[in-house]
Image (tube, rainbow, N blue to C red; front, side, top):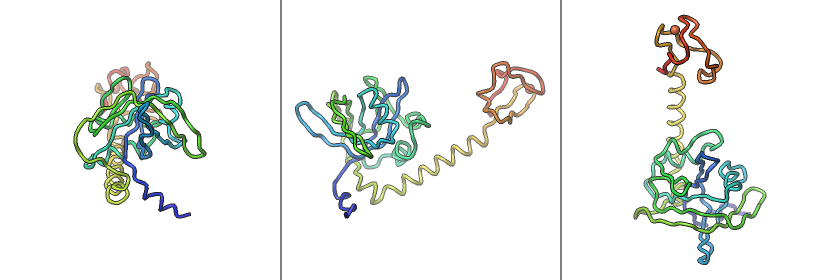
Length: 213
Ligand code: FE
């Protein structure tokens, strides 16, 4: 089978949003299409390994933010190259919440959707969902999956490497320091997880006297 033929099917790129309890989660999806006018409905396919997909299974609700050409490549890297299980992706971008769902601030259009049906396939789950709310946010060209494959992917990968590098530098440089005596904490246990009665081994003051610097 010529799998490349499937790339001739056109898609956009979207930030999918959902809630994990109070916490917003999300990922990048490309398989979205309108499938009915009455009710206004879309189909969305998610990989079964996606943490966001597992959250949608529970809540039955999701948001879509349509990406435009010219979007910061890091947005795609942030939502596409890491899991919401480990990372608070929304903390890395500008976003807003509406009707209890998260949206990317820089979107062309956005949708709130409620799942009507879901179909399990071996690799993916297909959600058919009613569009509860829809809004055009600005006039611009939508980013397509073809854009991503033909010229955007390199920028996305580079932005992700820079982001990982920044995180590494920060975790290497930031240390908890006793503001009284200057002792630098370097224990195995992360400082945040030390018991509340932890005392500075040099001068004996409590955790509240330590600062990140
Ligand atoms: Fe101290």
